[in-house]
Each structure stands twice: as C-alpha cells, then as structure tokens.
Image (tube, rainbow, N blue to C red; front, side, top):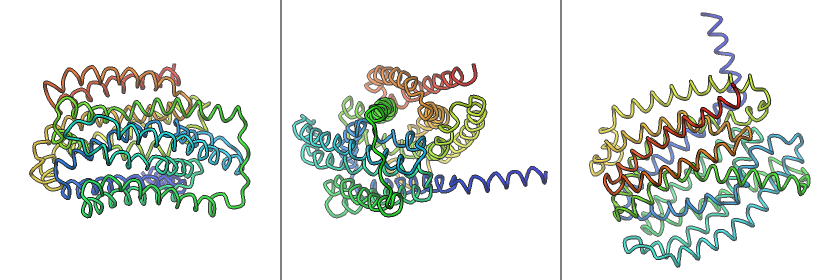
Length: 426
C-alpha cells in the first residue's frame, strides 16, 4: 500500500509539473464563470429577450464555424511539431495574418447578410443587432489563435489565465450590458470583450512569448498543409459544434416560440458544463498524443486509461445532477424554469455519450491526424439529426430535440470508438 501511495504521489507531482492542474483549473473556472454568468443573465433579462439573444448568438455561432477557415486549429498541431522557437513563431504569425484577412471579409459578408435576412417578426430586432455582433468575429478568432498557441507551447498557466479572463469578460459584459442597455447591451458585449482579449494577448506574445525571436518564413507547401489541415478540422469541428445550434435553430423555426428556445438553453446549461472534464483533459493530453502518434502501443494503452477515467468521472457527475435536478434548477434559475427538469434529465444522458465517449475519442483522432474519419462520422450524424429533428420537434417540442441528441450522440460515440480500435488495435 505504501508503494502504491508513493507511486500515486509521484504521478500527481509529475502531472502538476507538466501543468495538468493549471489546464484543469482554467477549464473548471471557465465553465464556472460561464455557468454563473448564464444564471445571472437569465435573471436580469426577460424570458423573451433571452430567447432573442439565444437566437442571435446561435446564428453568430454558425458563422463562426467558418472563422479563418479553421487555420487556428493548425497551431495546436504544427507549433507542437516545430522544433525551434523561430519555427513556432512562424506558424503563429502565418495563422494570425492569413486568418485575420479571411475573418475580416467573412465578418463583413455576414453582417450584410444579417441585415438583409428576412427574420421572423418575433426576432425582427436581429436585423439591427446581429450585424454589429458579427464584427466580433476577427477578434474572437485572433484570441482563439493565441489561446491554442499557448497550449501548443506548453504555457499552461498562461493558457488557463487567458481562458478565465476571457470568459469572465464576456459574461460580465453581457450582464452589465443588459442591465444598462437591455438586449442591445448584451448583444454587443462579445465585440468589446474579444477586442480587449485579442489586443492583450498580442502584447503578451510580443513581450513575453517571442521577445526578439525572428519568425521563420512559412514555405508555400507548409502553408498549403496548414490550410488543408485547418479546413478539414474546421469542417469536422464545425459539424460537431452544429448539433446544439441545429437543435436551437430548428426549435425556433418549427415552434416559433422564443420561450421554448430559452427553456432548451437553460436545460442544456448544466449538461454542457460537464464538458469541463473531457475538454480540459483533452486539451492537456492532445500535444502528448501528437508527439507519440507513431507509437501504436503507447497510444492504445493511454487511450484506454484515459477513456475509463473520463467516463467514470462524467457518469458520476451526470448521475448526481440528475438526482438533484429539481432543487438545482429552482435555486439557480428560479421556479419559472422548473418545467425544464425532465428535459435536463434527457440532455444529461446525451451529455454522457458525447462528453464521456465521443469527444474523448474524436479529439485524439483529430490530434493524431485522423481528421477525415471524424469528418465522415460527423456528416452522417448531422444528416441523422436533421431528419430526426424534423420528425420529432413538431410532435414533442424541445423534448424531440433531446431524444434526437441521445440517439445521434450514441451512434457517433460507437462509430468513433470503432475507428480508434481499427487504427490502433487491429
């Protein structure tokens, strides 16, 4: 027993030295800040305004899926693989320059389209507010590039601090903006917050990360490789991210009820926050899997241990929240939202499937260059989701979207595990 405890102590110390606790703490505090922000925002805004804000943020999220054509994701892989500080600086600089040029054009096109789009009468105010929201896109993408770069450079404490500051700025901005200027103030918070974060991170990189380091020029062939990987990752990650957005959009379109959209957002808040476990661990381990991607035995053994730990943790958390669902919702959101408790229970099941199994496996497949398999599975999942949502939402409302999530996430989780087993075990 003494030997086992000593070994455990050494392992914990080793993980702490590598920054695992910093990444975990940063992710945890980020989710806590977002969760608390959502609670305060729900209480500050009316149910109708919160539904309209959700509608606009949903559209913004769709557009953001195309940010930089995925170039930001290239940093997390190719900055890790680069052997020199000059090479790493060159990767970051290339992604920032090319990505910003793409994002400025994308933001202008999206702003114009948002102003001209025939929004339904319930969401007509989006014609004015949504174009302004789109201007945040280049700043948010630049911040994301800096954030991924910090992780790729193993600056875990800086990565965690930046993540917490960013989410605190965004949510406090929404609350303050809503209190001062109502829906308009809440909708513009992202633009101000991400502009501050992008400029702050830029100064930090210039003075502390690459001081006096010359950026190695990126060759044309390397640039094409970064663009290709980023585009594949964008499509894959975009399709994964579209699942919640599709549910929200189809609920708003098929029911025409801002209250139903707000209910689904509230019911999903806690299940989505559970992703702290898988996302923080995934963010920490991905660079190590990239470095060992050619060692099949190492990858397979590490994956089994990782998947077991994540599933046990998330399963226990989901079960505990399900048991405390009613008092939990009453305390944090108020009795007005007690009706979402059964809906939240269904979404907890889908949360276990996607955060416990699907994300853990898919993240490692993408990190080790197996992006195309993820892309095919995600495409099939999107198709299944759309079909099931169109069938179930008109009959069951928001509950139809929750049932769809369980079916689709379960199928995709099984598919990505099968691919991983084929790649590293067969």
